[in-house]
Length: 145
Image 1: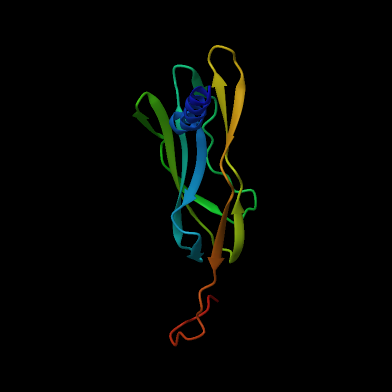
Image 2: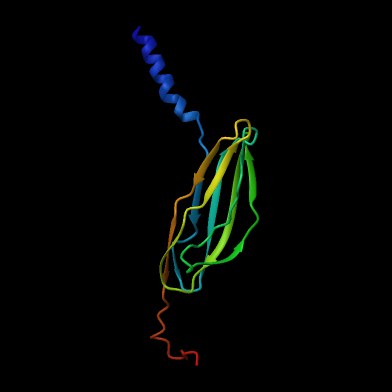
């Protein structure tokens, strides 16, 4: 009886190692920039089984604070590995306001093809710190008139 429980326990523990859950995450190339510098934000939705699910909306990054400017959003790349699909979208952003600005979470709706059940996938928010440029030591600095 103890051997059966031990085998069942081991099977239970190792099952979690082979299960892949759908994920959505956002990563910035840098989290601190000088005013006007650009950074790349990559949003990735991974491990979608397209036979059973589809992503209902692939929204672009949006800034709710009004301090981040979207420079360019690349087309969404699709990558298939072992029957699972990942979507990757890169966006170049900048800011001309110094401070700590938050890019809100991006939300995606994944829908089951058979049942119509919807699941929301969400990235974490990103905090971008925009540093001012020190121009006090520049001898040839001329202010805009």
